[in-house]
Amino acid sequence: MGRDGPRRTRRGALAGGLTLAACVAVGTVTSAGTMGAGPARNAAPASTGSPSPASTATPGRGATPGPGTTGGPDGRRPSPKPSASIGKGEGILRVLTFQGHVEYGTTLTGVDWVSSFENRTGCRVVRLDRVRSAEEMAAKFRPGSYDVVSPPPELAGQLVAEGKVAPIDTGLLASYKDVPERLRELPSTRRGKEVFGVPYLWSADEVLYRGERPKGPQDLYDDERVAIRDTPMSLAGAALALRKARPDLKIGDPFQLTPEQLDAAVELVSRHDGPGRVYWRESLDVIRAFATDRVRLGGALPYHADLFARAGRPVKALDDAPMTGWADSWMLSSGAASPNCGYRWLDWITSPTAQRAAAAWTGLAPANPKACGGEARRVCDAHHAGDAAWLKRVFFAVRPSKDCGGAGGECTDYTDWTKRWKDLVE
Image: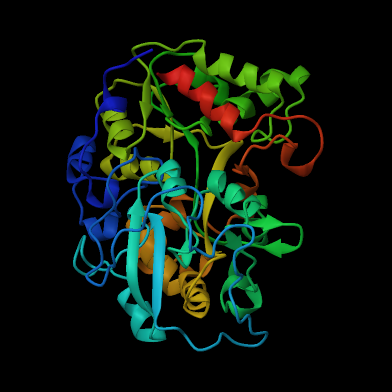
């Protein structure tokens, strides 16, 4: 079913996220450097950001390595892997990430945590490619073309399964131990005892509302005038609502659903679907939907709740219900030409300095709570960073798989979710 309205609107945005127009829409204008660029990880596919001055040619597209590359299941593992220290850097690094998740001063002067990495390590970032969706990242990533990549959980599991990323020796990363165990143990970054990803930025899908307080997350699906994030992973939010409403379904992990459970989640989302519903991909869409009274309820982020609070708008978050969330991570390519510079990047990107800058700019919470100071303080407060009880309410995303995440049984995989979601929203 086709729709007009915010979901179909594509607007240029600062670093792919919050625009000045968004601030005006809710009645507040602040410095972009302090308010952040806004979450952009679920935005629609678009061109990558301006290339680094030292950028090389754009790599060939494709989900699997082409002739002559070293990636893939039989690709070369990063070598050497020292046991006590990172070896001498190779001098260059190639990076693939989301729009706005790595900045080097070209979007806004002073917003730059690449130059400090280069000055500290001697590893020059010669390629920094940024994408706007997991699908675009999957199409662009070739292990032989990048040294490090920052995938969302729905892609991370695929890269691990396909052998496109390598195990990481976390003992070489000074700040890894500061990341809460809950985030270090996420299944999207691990396979058995091997670690494949270091957490970077995370957030949660809260239910925001104006007016009467909803009874629970299921109210999000009992009204047409609501906003729902336009991603197949939103089906996990519906499944989470069904855990309480439909105990007969016996839903455990909302990201690992049997065919019957997935059918129920799709039915719940579609029950009151109509032209008044907003399926949002860009922050500006959900902000305007609330600011113009188009919706009364919405699935959004702590970032959005904080923005409305600063603007004095009567939009609140349901504060006592379980919710889904995600944590993006950094991974080392199995075909990395510069594995030591890759390790130096992983070490730097988990440090409080780098994560503080990233959190303040994106509006997403840093994985390292020691970053929660200065310009990142408000972001951390909005996400209750450091509050173990709040974090326990979050069901962090993992790629849906046929084997139910290794738990046994017969579940649906991400391909099934993608097809069902496409049929629902188009």
